[in-house]
Image (cartoon, rainbow, N blue to C red):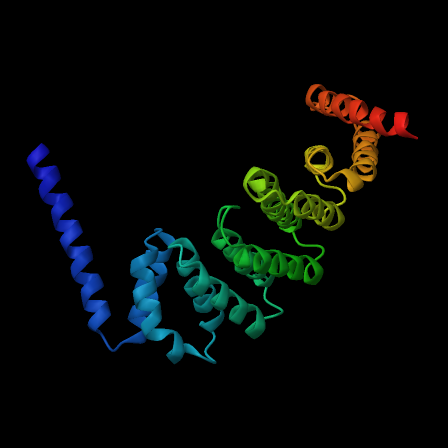
Length: 270
């Protein structure tokens, strides 16, 4: 029985392969369309795509063209060729704006760029493009069933850009022991907080800004020290005002003690 099962399985397999190879070589576009659609429904997207590539230009203007173009775009998406998927889905929406698949196609076209977005530590060109494309979808299809997912993806991508910007600012603090450029670190966090006022990294950014200001003050030349100590104190007070129970309290308080001690020298002089 097992032998018979294997024989039947192999027969079906070879028959299927033979049918596919025959269709690839055939000049009959209807045969290619029929088998391509069957393979698509079976989830065999690579094979379906090879057949669709051959017939898409020949179906322009035909009744089956809309369904074919949708399946064609989907095969690229399902095989993770996201650049081409985006292009083909955008072509579909442009050609069939009234289609009941237009909203889904527009969403998947935009989502293709979401998949292209790299990890936050790398250059974020595709992330920015993905946000733009998803936002374009949201604006064009405000009633779409995919709206909630699109908003969620935008939020995720926005956070990636935010984290990237924070890490760039943080690098200035990390390299300060070698560069001694405390002012660049302060400016980097000022810029970050200006660009991302509602950031989840706000507490860390305010602390790191105070940390850089502390370093600048205590390492200053005499005639600049008093002013810089007072500025650093202001940064500390701002951190504590916004985050009274800050997780950085222990370190921040020690730095403030050093600043306060140094300021006593100037109070005595005056």
